[in-house]
Image 1 (cartoon, rainbow, N blue to C red):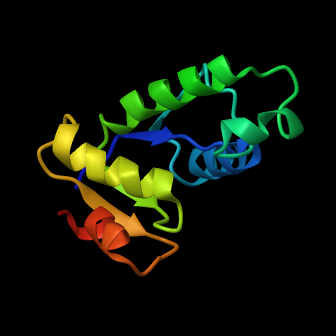
Image 2 (image 1 turned 180 degrees about the horizontal axis):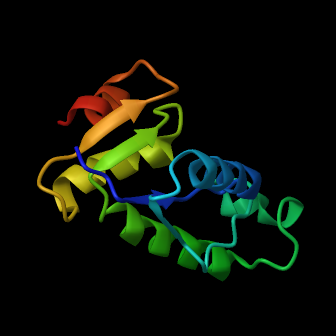
Length: 123
């Protein structure tokens, strides 16, 4: 498939930065979309926020999650890990509520349960 745009989102700022740097070097023609309002709190848990990101409030984290979800629902192809319940949920939600008619998933960290199976193959 012809892919001209990628959406790069993670709670890990370093992971995003490294991936974007790699893409710019290896495939400079790709357009990269990020969530500019994302606080990238370093954890998937708002309750542990204070120990990860100075100055970020729980409201900031919720806004980040919702805007990231909106971006995810626009995607058609996903590279994710089903060891993360967030990314598994994203794949499932994208199939049900997303803007794309077909959703494809590449799982780079497989978990073995029915929820993960649904994320990979659909429900």
